[in-house]
Image (tube, rainbow, N blue to C red):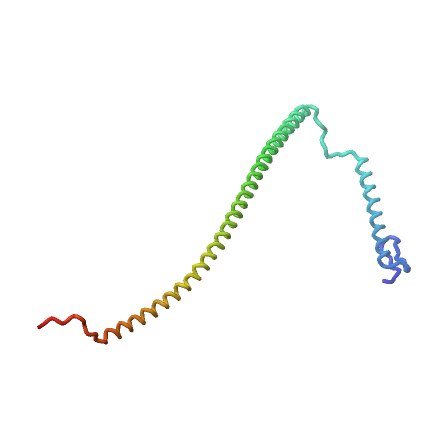
Length: 170
């Protein structure tokens, strides 16, 4: 197999042409031959009468016309039914989209309200926390005062103070 290899029926690859160009020319020649063969086959089949089909009976033509008309009416009715069903589906789709839109709007409003209430609650909790710090400080002061009062009471209880009233005779 050399550069001048013969591919098919007289087609010779040209040495000066690139391999790609040569292959394209080869494919074009095959396509041309196929077109010519198809044309010959179609001429051959057109020239011969078709022996496979039986002759048409003229007595069945009115029945065929009735069936075609009935089929046409059935198709018209079916198309009308399909149109009605599609319109119904479209109406339902619009209702569903509207309901979905309202639900999304309601959820959005509820979420906004919840977020605002949460921030309000956090603000109140922060205020309560600050107030609790003050209460804890007051509690600590009260405990300290109670401790001092207990010491004072213990100290005063240990000291005997003479009473101003004489003691009753025994």
